[in-house]
Image (cartoon, rainbow, N blue to C red; front, side, top):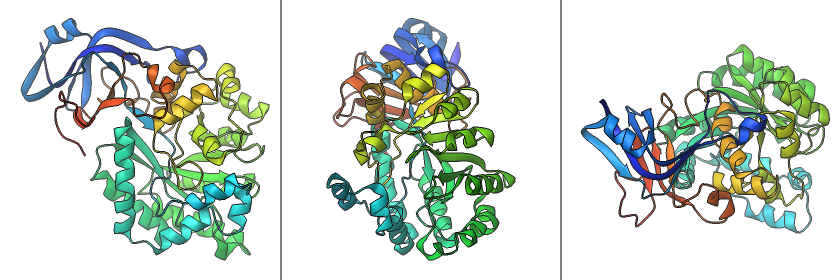
Length: 428
C-alpha cells in the first residue's frame, strides 16, 4: 500500500502521451487512454496512474491528503505554453483595428507602433505595475488549463528595463501556482535610439545585457528576420548567450523565408518558433534535429494574415512539433492554449491527438522540461486538467469557450470552475 497525499478518482478517461522526449511522426498522435481511471501523487509527483479500482486498492491517503472526484469527465496533462510575451504594459487594440483596415505589421512598426510602442510603455511602467498587469493574465491562463508558462523579456531593450522585466517574472513566481520558465530576449528589436548604430546595440546585448541576465533566465531568444536581426547577427547573439549558459531559441521565418530554421538547427537551438515561411530545407533540418518546431496559430489569426505554418509538412517529415499561444499585446492577444489547439486542428490540419501531444509533451520539450512535465506518468510532476467534457477531442471541437472544470498543479487543486460543487482546495 503506497501512501499518497493527492488522489484523483472517477475519471471517465485519462488521456496522455508517454515518454521523456518529444514525439515525432506517427508517435505524435499516439496517446494512451485509460477508461474509468484514477491517479495518485505524493509531494507533487505522480506515483500511480491506472484503473480506478486498482489505484484505490493500492494507495492510501495520508492524514490531510486530498481526494478529488473528476465527476466522470476527461482528464489530460496540464497544458504547457512554451512561447509567450506575457509581461507587458498596455494592450494594443488600435493596431489590431489598423491591420484590419489594411496596414501591415511592418508598416505599423515603421510608424513607431508594434514592439516599439510596448517598449515605450514598459520603460515608463514601474515594476509593481508590470507585476499587477501580468498576474491576472497568468490567472486566465491557469483557468484555461495552462500549468507551465514560458515568458520572454524583450519590451525593455535597455539593461535597466530588461532587468525590470526579469524581476517582474521572478516576483510572479511567488504569486501564481504555475511553473514559470524565463527566456531573455533583448534581441526582440533594435531600439529606435540605436537605429543609426545597430552594431552598438548588439555589443550592448552581448557584452552587458546577456551577462547580467544569465543568472535570471534559462534561454536566449532572437527575432531573426532581414528587417530585425540578420542570420549573422542572430548567430552572434545566440553564441554570446550560450557562452553564459543560456540555451538559444529563435523566432524563425515568421515574416518571410530566410533560412532561420536552418540556422536554429545548426546552432543547436532548443526551438525554432513561428515558421510560417519555413523552406523545404528548413523542414528537413528540423526533422533531422532535436530542435522543436513551435507553431503559433494564434499569431496568424491575430494578424489576419491568411498564412499558416505548414504543420502537416513538418509532422510528416518527422519534425518535433509543439504549439504555443505567442500571447503578446500586438499579434496574438490570447492566453488560451485551448484556442491554439483548436486553430491547429482546424487551420493547420493537425488531429486532436496531435494537438494534445503538441500542447503537452512536445511543448514541454521546447522548454527543456519533457523529462518532468507534459505527460501523466509516474515520476512526472502532477499537473493535470479535469475537462468539462466526456471526450478530450471536444476541446478543439468546442471552440470559443473554456472547456476546463478543474486544474491541478504540483498535486494541488489550484483552480475550479465557478459553481463546481465538487471542488476541493482553493483558487489562486
